[in-house]
Image (tube, rainbow, N blue to C red):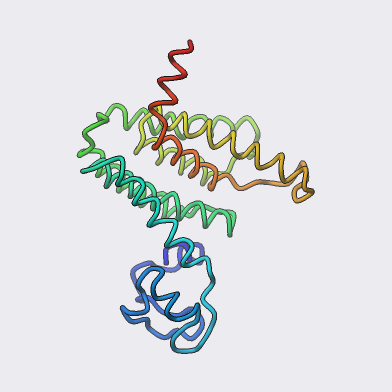
Length: 228
């Protein structure tokens, strides 16, 4: 719902869930993640319109990410990381489909991250503040130096990532995301799918870098520091 409505400027509160084709209000039985799509054979119960496969794929990806996080973390830290994961998944898919990261999504992530920061047993408030600077600062500098080569949505999303992750992990997430984006760009160039002057949305790579940093960041940072 968030991925569908926000790029269109629609509220995620009202109206209630409905078919975008026939506008029929969906019942609870129509809204069970994955199960409803499978039972309905990918079609609306009321008009027979096709429900795109991206709906169950997003539901499956979100459930898997939540489950993986729950296998490693617990308590308020788990809640915080799952909230961040929901924001990142939404931002990644919206950016991939529309080339934007809505301000309303970033603002919601910032407000939720700020509230959850008071319950984080791992990071102090100074680390959350430094994380915002470490996340948004490098991309802001890149945008200024490149005169618009980095989108404002990416900068804001990176700042929100820093609020949740702190400076060390968000810097690692930026490095990993940039590396993945560079590799993807080279592959697309070699395949002729992109030209040298074509843009590449960065949101999905930021999300992937953040997930990698969450799962393996401490080990990667410790390994890197041991090599200095």
